[in-house]
Figure 1 (cartoon, rainbow, N blue to C red):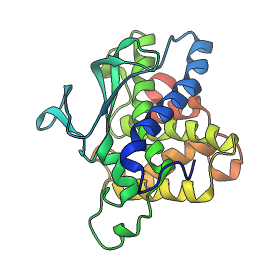
Figure 2: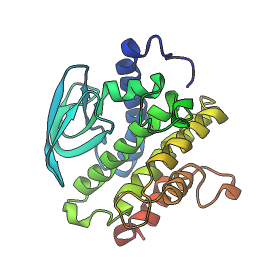
Figure 3: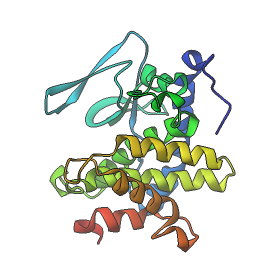
Figure 4: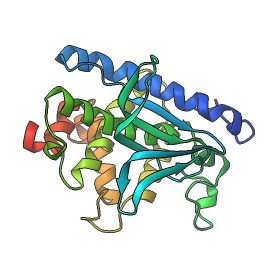
Length: 245
């Protein structure tokens, strides 16, 4: 997953790369959903290009979510309607601000101090992990819909975010099986997760340690020593025990 994008071509190529990651996620999750009779997991796609702004139908603590092309975050909204990879307009969409992702390659993403500028979390797989996390929220949303469950029946507290990390790890393991990951890719992604973890438990997204444990569970299973690949049911049982425990 390395070498496709450089600092020099990032502005031109990041949108295409994000689309290719979403395509890969669709192709990974769709067979699992169909095997279980849960329908199509593919979310809508909103790529907020340079100069554009997207107003989501979802709210946060400050009101309606408005995403600019350089907003340093990515989102999933269960009520936003957009076209999926097949061109079908669906409810429940991933929102990706393209210029923020460009910053992963240009060294401006979440740079707050001199060590950040080294670019420890730059690279294709770092960007892909962020996308896979938001897709994880879409997976949960689609499971709720398939089971005709209300949103209140979803994962609770920090588990609502940690399950998305775990499901991102499931997908990453399939990329590794295809020999498309290097050790550097994985280290970069883990470095980003350490950066964006909550300082203390109980703040919504999980601490760095909790988030690394979640993506590791998705990637390896119960522990690294298992030597296997994590499965979605492991993520569901761990972070959604009310329904799958």
